[in-house]
Length: 96
Image (tube, rainbow, N blue to C red; front, side, top):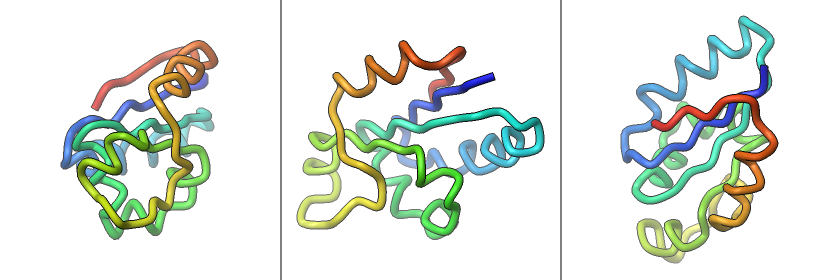
């Protein structure tokens, strides 16, 4: 199973961290796309310390510039075009 988590809520870490743990236990592959206020989730200490989340994550550059200007993202920067590509390459999509 290959999952895509789309994080658009500021407190996305509350759901993303346990979902990440469950995916690891089940040996599911997953990626994350952070958009809207969800980019603020990447500032959460536990998210920053979780290499499983960070290594396959993309942050919407427009959202990043809006919510966290003049800072660097720990995730790769991308666009809604990247999100469309990611959706096409995953079995299931989960919106957080």
